[in-house]
Each structure stands twice: as C-alpha cells, then as structure tokens.
Length: 279
Image (cartoon, rainbow, N blue to C red; front, side, top):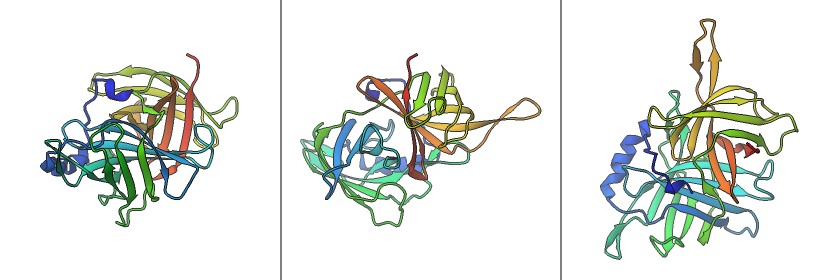
C-alpha cells in the first residue's frame, strides 16, 4: 500500500496558501489513511471507492481519490475518477485529541506549469464523519457542496466502514495495456525512474488507441500516487518542449495487479484504464 512508503513529500505550488489556512485547525485527521468502499445513496449497484493519502506538512489534510466501478474493474463509458484536496473545516475533542470531523473536497487540476492546483477554489463536495471517528472503520457521508463547482462527483455517497480492495500504488516501470483497446493498440511503456529532484519521473511511449493519440510523454510525480502526463515536442534544434499536461495518471493496485488510470482532471468520466503486462 502506498501509505507504507517513505520517499514522498508533497509540494503543491498554488495549493500552499490553502494548506496554510488549514493548519490553523491543528487537528488530526478523522479519516485514517486507507481505502474505503461505499455506495451512492438510493442505488443498490455501482460501488464507489475512496482512497486517501495524508499530505505532509498539513495536519488533518489529505488527498482523496474517488472512483466508481461497475462491471469488471471498469466498464467502458461508466467509469469515473476524480482527485480532490481535502481540507478540515472544524475540530472537536475526541479521546483527548482535537480531531477534524468535516472536510471540504476540492477537485485537483493541472496548471500551465504542470503543477497540481485547484482551478476553482470553491469545493464541490463536503465530507462529514458520522461514526467511529479516527478509526479504520470510520463511517462518513459525502454530499454536494452546493457551491456551483460541478467538476467531478455530484451524488451523495455513503461509506459504512467497509474496506476497499483497491489501494493507491506508487507505480512501477513496465508495459501497461488499455483494457478496452484492440490487440495492438493502447499499450504504454514506462521506462526508468529518476529521483534527483526529490520526486519520481519517467519517460513514456504510448502507441495510442481510439481514446488517446500516441506519442512520447513525460511522467512526473506531483503528489503521492498522482502523476502529470505531459506530451513532449521535438523541435528543429533537437530540444524537447513540454506542452501543458492534459491528463494525470493515478496508479492503483488490486490482487497484486497494478493498474494505471489516465484521467482528464476536467472531466472525470474521460478515463483510460490500463493493466500492467508481464515484464
């Protein structure tokens, strides 16, 4: 599980002022790091999963990855993935410790410099803990923030302490294949890793599919489990110019099998799901 590794420090650029505001609460998170399985209110089918990772340097703050799943891992046309910055909104004394019980969830995007940011500072969702605060089987609901920010999920979600079988994964080099692509299409090769700047990066070749044009890309970790996916341009001088990232990549794992999710942060239903192939 991602939460066990020690190499990551989160740097968020334009999110730093929001982190400073959140630190005023000085509360521990009421949502432990982990993976949670829930459902949409009023629906018997269609589970929703939330994976969380604490943000270093921001007490009580965390990254939340929400995704819904139907048939198989993802059913084409029905999947949805969205990354959020979760900020505490209150704190109460729980077992002698100040603990946050309510959070705002603001969708994460990518700016023109390739940094993670919140394009709209208004949150789109609100998370309220309802029972068993600060435990791994915590119960909570996620509802619409009624702010006018309509990016990402909008339905009410209920989590009753069930653990999700999916975990955020640090991501591994290798060949990944798009689940719904033709035999020769939709493979992505992640070659090598670089740790020199304190985060992980890799070169990527992508032969494309009906969902994505092929080319050469640069993969760079910006937060635990979240990478930017940046196209590389080759100029006459031989230099490489990076265009604005159009997607983020999130690595998840289930049953010892790694998956790479290519997500459009402006439209969480624009998802390409790839499974790692034999190395």
